[in-house]
Image (cartoon, rainbow, N blue to C red):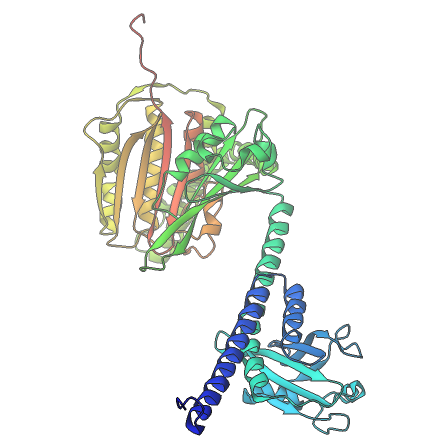
Length: 546
């Protein structure tokens, strides 16, 4: 009995199922091959190795014996052959270069399409005539894509006649994109590594000590110049919190204080070590933009230490000369000023032009007197002669100082306030010189703050020191100038001529702080304002035994 299994309709159906199954198997095999290429190439980050790996994988799938990869060089506007496999001639040692838009490969890039050709021996479309010596009989070229653009061309070729099937072309296109993405990643990795190597070479060849930390404050990098500052080997230091690192105590304490200032981009201070060396330190935040919102995320700190001992020695020599000259100038200037005063009284008061000339001369001599006084004050402070220290309650001293300076700030319509806690611990200081330091800070803030600005004088205790700070919302100071603000006679480039001064006000504050065993610092952001501070040791408590 015929059960109907061999009727013509059923035979056709079986044939169709078999063909469909074979087609599915081919497609699965193709996808598997494409995935294999992608997985193989993506595991390699070295660009040259990735190129060779890609060629091996392609030739394992497409039934020809030769392949090549050309990459777009955007700087030169050329397509450069970077790797070849199975070619008779070497076109890589001296790379084959084709202008974008020229030749067959240029057409692939320009029109973003696959090109399939037969015999290329006498093909006039070749941009490099020497390629005809390769005797290629069949070639297929597919554009490679990455990040939405064509980055190169993947070519497969045969030295004997060959017909590329539609399936092979589809596979070639898919492989080209997989290879393109992998090669682009390898290229980016290579560029990043090269930049890191150049940056590392620059950092380690720098004469200044450079120390970097991660966002937790742990040391992540230090260059060769920084290693001598530590008492342990660099292998033991990496990963250690900077605040607890085996540094000189004075330097470590200064870095600790600077890193506690979270609101400023950078802080500056200098220290003198036991061996007499003077170091200038700049402590800067590393910040990066948040991927979630507009806020910046603190990503660590960078510390730069510069040995400025030679500058300090030169400064001492210069000041010694200036101080000698100042003493010699003071007496004749006094005589000249007395003569001008007598001349002013003798001249007819109605002669306005002559009176104006006399006033200009008197003002100039008074300015020279101020300069000489400041120089002699520096000598007095640095020599320590006449210092009379006592336990000082800062609250009334700061209040009196702000009252003394209030007329100056009122003339510029500047607002001001005193911000101190109810109780401040005492300090041991010379009241006269400490008052002078605060007055200089307030005067400096008023000079460089616009009319209508605001100035705050505040003080607070932190750790083992007492901080006095003058904060303004003035024009701020460029980062490159902050490290020199306390130098004698230094003037920030671009400062308006009408802002008068001897150039010694901040240097005097620094000398006063150091004479009291403290230090000065500045935090400033251009267009946002500045904070000038002085830190003094707290007064030692008196023991019950006297």
